[in-house]
Length: 483
Image (tube, rainbow, N blue to C red):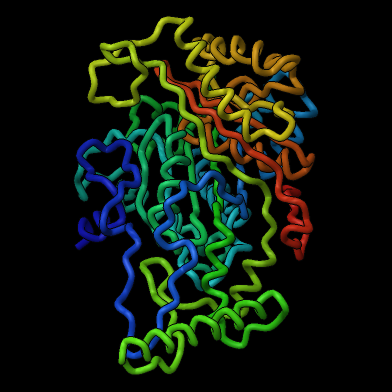
């Protein structure tokens, strides 16, 4: 039963223990429940969507990098340009194993609280958790740290609800992804929204660090999580929670909200009457009984209409930032010399000039989403100084496409490895969170570059929230880490 429960939560098999990516399976497709007899059905506005989604709204951000929460990390990066924000004195870090574990648990709960506690209550938001590569085999008898490995990961986000104080929230796990370089998860999130046109929101939760690696089974990190002072080479414990949404999806629910009040919903009552009258006319023309009411069409992720309070909670959420669809650049070419992403093909690595040309094509495509054509800043990660050459394609491309932009100026380029440390599998999520926070506070655009791999790179643009006149914010979102 335990293995069956876990298997339902995961999207791919356990055999590889890596890359449990969202695949277009029947389980997660737009499956709906059959309508009730003699009742008209309102089809969601975006059902059968053919146009790809290009942006997702960020409605919640939770961030923790070691002792820094929320905007605190961004504030420290600006206070200390050009150097690490972590304490130089290793004695500033906890050495007791029990305290390390308790601190890690508290940070994990805090991130979920900061990122998702203001979201809609009593609706099961789909979630995906992201972790580093898992070294464990498929078995329910493998224990580490007193917990069953896959059960721990699959239930982790939901288990954090109580310590996060989210007693009235609901979270349904779609599964866990185990990848050391999981920047492709964002593209999978876009695909998930396209495959499920009724889903209004998705929760991404990423976590990595030495205390987390004990559960993924990376025994080589044992000296770093065990009892004792912090060592040189320790990872930066990082957790990120992102609530991504398509606001237009909620509009399909509005006509069915009981006792909905306010001008915002008035148009949907008129729309409901129009649809019901059209359904009655169609039934008469077909010689069938006329429907007596317009009935909500349940689906896999939205089984019933929201209440007026749930709708109000959603409408009060500000759009913190807008994530644009990532641009992926490959440095691999097939036997014909053409770029390829297919790992099954026998491909070779491009030469340096070919990589630079490929990156410029990707950069130019990403810059089309940047207002004014130049981002205010770039967050990037090469995974450390030994792979610093990974920035070369960007610097060459930027010379042509971003005149005047200097990646090595402290106020323009933010090297995650140098400024924060090794955030591991959480790196792309840390970059997206920092971009959202910086853009929300300064009302400008950031770009993120995931340059940790030898054979590809990923470019993501994060633009600020739309003008307040587009969708009024009913409270000011506060990134103050002390609250």
